[in-house]
Image 1: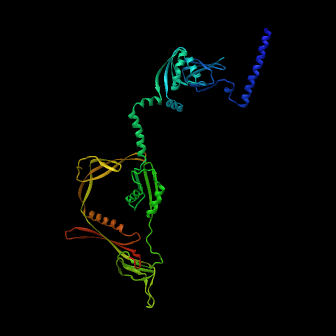
Image 2: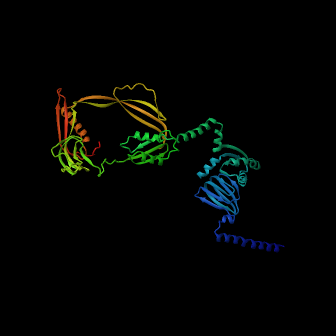
Image 3: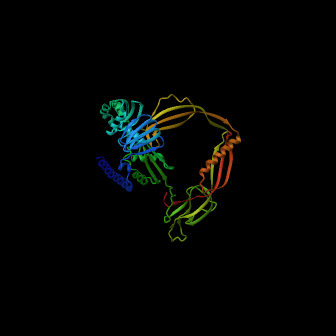
Length: 106
Length: 398
């Protein structure tokens, strides 16, 4: 059983990986916007005071010193001072304030 | 960003205070339900202020209940709230609307007709003509066709060479150029005489055509025939022939001017005392505000006009006029006899210069002083000129 399960796992992996690769290749070939086709976040940082995160999933934590946002590739953590959310819609989130650090928590 | 702010202002929004333990959850649910939030500010661990549209705010109670948050309105911003505040003030709205209506009404009339560029034609004549064609202060401006007025003016007023009519705001500007009228000449095929324009002593006569009547040394008076167009043949059998007389007749002419010599002159000096009289002009009707008497014996008036206008062209029929009376002191001053003589002579000379035609050649200027029985001096300036005194005149005409 363990053998079988291992085999099954491998097959699944084999199946999944080429598919993702293929999608990525096509988007690269056709120069399509990746964040839409691959469903990954697009992060724009202007200076050290303004951050725009597009294509996010949800907000996990929000305080003056730290904002954590859930995305398809993991949690994004923004630390800083006097952070405020300038605007929030279902697609993007704009964070203002003194940005200090930006992390991907995978 | 400004545009967005303006849009938010137009739509109206509320600033709310959200209290609870699951503020993140509150935000997530809001975004998922397409409720737009902006300017989120955390006040403390469990309080934050959020801006939210009016539409979004109406959907909030359900979200608040789900997340166990308390929502309170901190302030209301935007146009809808402002409008709502003024909705009950009927007089205010009425005033606002009547202002707009009055403004529109006032700007649809002509309030000023401005004529310029004319030198010989009197401005009043042009204004009267324009008024006769429906252009005067107080007329509706919409029915005015400027092209039509231009062509009408050009046809009816022969003295005008060019006309421009422009309607701008509440002012109509009429810019004219006058025609330089050519001297009246008799056509070459019409018979005419050459007559004297003024008295003089004939110096020389050059006859190109016609019969010479005067000769050198003759004294002629104004209107006298110098060169006749009636050419009489020596042969009595031949009838007199009428020709277009041509030629130049040079004659000495004299111009004289007498100016009394004044040894006492009056000098006008402003004392600095003024009195203002105010009046208001509404729709060309002048209302003078009550004032006492002008307390000065000798004075001059200066009128200061202040029109109510927006910019240069949007004039309203309301003019504020200040008549300022300046008190004058007339000081009688004695001057030197020689100085007085020179003054009188100069005055006579400048007055004469206006009379003498431009093509006349000044030969001699005489200046003398005459004294009458009372001993009063008079400066007499006599200028001798050499000029062409010939002038065409149709035979038989006046």
